[in-house]
Image (cartoon, rainbow, N blue to C red; front, side):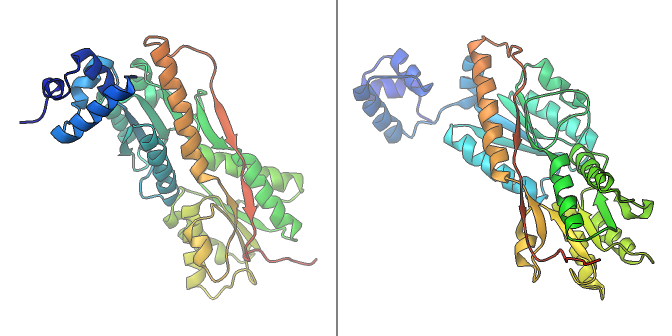
Length: 341
């Protein structure tokens, strides 16, 4: 039989009120805490989280919804979220949307039904409508990496447009005039990075032929197919801007299979400094995002909102949104060749 609070009472001689306060994280006298710690260990007492959740209206669980759990970028962020939540005594319930809007909507409803205290989302959908069940249940939500087109919410992002523009300007400063882009305009970060690409090209007075714009999704498959098409063009670009890590991998795969060398024959500017950038013979020049910071700041904002909700006795209130924009930096590798005109 599992140990009960009454067993702890008999072991320590303390009141049920003191034991309950201790089990719910309240302050008790140091000498009483010592007795209770010893009793809990001796009796192997396990807190009934379901029962405690009904009493405290808190499950000490955070739901995390990701657009693709196989994405390495997401994996780094998930790890950091888990580290931060563990320090605070919270668990993490992860759901994978597999880049599918309908699946994401089902996942959000699932998390709401599980009575999570808050939700951290790396979203698929461009519309905040997918989060209506969470809004209806007054559950705090923080967005990471991506935002919505129709509504501002608490978020941690980078300035994707400026980061991409800086990457393309670096190519231009190295003499490149014929620059192609492989991107995914259908989601927030992809659209922002494409707009940054176009901004840099426009400011430099450089035309972008339609065949230099490869729009698809942020995947290795898209990067591979798009790079192969660009390599076969009669008027081939001298440089390619790849707008995320999955695309980077596809681009390098296509180059490895071809007889074309990087950067001698074609230069590549990528996004995200992850494993691929370090193992290549020619390291990629990339825009590096502070991925661990996404997880750290996301948890920090969510905990602030959860505490505000408790203080307001169930109401989140409306004090404006917290939007943290993290800085990126350029990691200079060897994948960009300097062209002399």
